[in-house]
Amino acid sequence: MLRINEIFYSIQGESSRMGLPCVFVRLTECNLRCTYCDTEYAFYEGTDRSLESIIDEVRAYNCNLVEITGGEPLLQAPVYELMTRLCDLGYEVMLETSGHILVDKVDPRVKKIIDMKSPTSGMLKKNDYRNLEIASPNDEIKFVLGSRLDYDWAKKVIEEYQLTEKLTVLMSVVFGDLAPQELAEWILADRLKVRFQLQMHKFIWSPETRGV
Image (cartoon, rainbow, N blue to C red; front, side, top):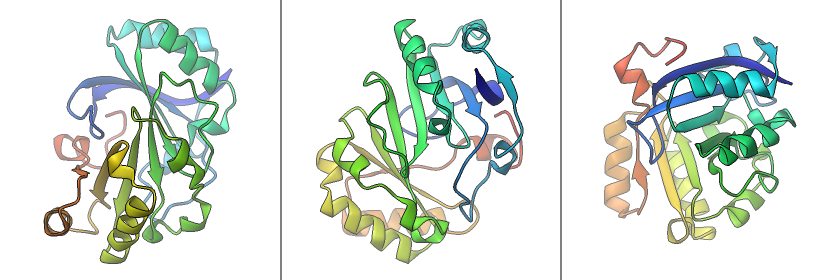
């Protein structure tokens, strides 16, 4: 059983799969409290569901791309089996996870989007940097930035772990806090080999809209 906050079909708003139709499975619970969190409703709201019922609902959308998200999905142990079963069924599975839980037990077929917490988040000390060492070329490291301090910190992490030489690095702004143009200009000035991204779904729909 897994406690599920919501399952919905939408446009993938982030990552290298941005713009593609995707089924999102949002799990309940998170043990971080980031200052800029936009899914606080997933901390507690949810319904207990069997893996079979979750997979049946995913199948009904007839979409091959599935993202497991939260909250923090890795807090619920059965999620590992869910991801493996979806992979076995031929789905392309993505996992959105914070950088504070070791991802070594995740099925290697899953594309892990590892969200490293910046100083602005208030959760910087929670990062487990071992994730940067064990991430595969199929994975992506995400930095959500709210200030120049965040950007300079991210640059140091990228350099120390040679991230852009190994995998895709994503950079985005804290929505409403840092102007996208500023971040884009910093990236260009420093010639960083990163993928700049915006949360596309917040431009298609109202930023407060659930289930998109």
